[in-house]
Each structure stands twice: as C-alpha cells, then as structure tokens.
Amino acid sequence: MSIDTVTETTQYLSFKLGEEIFAVDVAKVREILDVIAITKVPQTPDFMRGVINLRGSVVPVMDMRLKFGMPPTERTVNTCIIVMEVTQEGETMVLGSLADSVQEVLDLEPDQIEPAPRIGTRLRSDFVKGMGKYNDRFIIILDIDRIFSAGELEVIADTISEDKPE
Image (tube, rainbow, N blue to C red; front, side, top):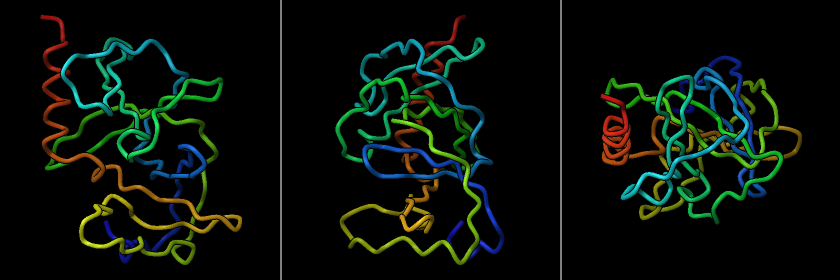
C-alpha cells in the first residue's frame, strides 16, 4: 500500500527505537508483551534475537534496532515485544519485535502523512510507508510487510519449523 492509497483516518501504534518514533498499522498488531525469556537460536540473522513461547506457539523475536543499523535494544522497565502479523507472498507469519517503549495509538488523517523521503538508490527505504506529522514531530510509519526480505522470512520460518515439537 503506498501513501497514495491512504484515503481515510488510520490508527497506528507508535513506539520508540532509540530517540526515533516509529509506527505500524494497528491492524497488524496482535498484542504487546512485557519482555519474557527469549531463547537464542544458533545460525540465525543477527537481528533475530531468538524465539518465545506464546501460549504454546513458537514466535520469533526480532530486534528492529539491529535491523535498522542501530545499537541493539537494551532491556529496561519499558522494553516490550510487539507481536505482529507479517504477510508476504500470500503467507502470514506471526513475529515479535523488540521496542524500547510503546507510546500510544494515534489516529492519523491522510493529510498528516507525507510520502517517504527518497534516500537514493543504494539505501532501501521501501519499508517506510510514510512520515506522519503528530504534535510537531515526525513519526516513521513502517510497512511491516516489507521490512524483511523473502529470504530472511524463509530463514525465520525454517527456524520455527525446526523448533516445533514432533
């Protein structure tokens, strides 16, 4: 979905990574958890911190700070896991994302969202849906379905299927 197709008010869950505020469409969010024990899985990408047991299901947990080239998330009293649904090529996968803190649910009108800035051809920014303007601040609106490549999701899916009990 491009910024051109946003024609009505949309709700976004905003969260902090470092000093920046990011947001995802609330329709993609399943729940928000306090950080629980994360089991590290060998030979997975650096940004994959491991897996958690969520009511009997194996859910991979990503560190979005690492994915975006930032220092790793440090656990604080506000650190949480945002459990989201990611859809790519018709397949839906549930995964968790570490966030420094969750801010609030925002209602953004189409005129409060500007297209993602062009950063050149070498930097990938197709996962930025747009820049929201809220309380004199920019909020980076993410297209969660485009953050991970098909290859990365395949590695993650393979890891989950290997961890399932027989």
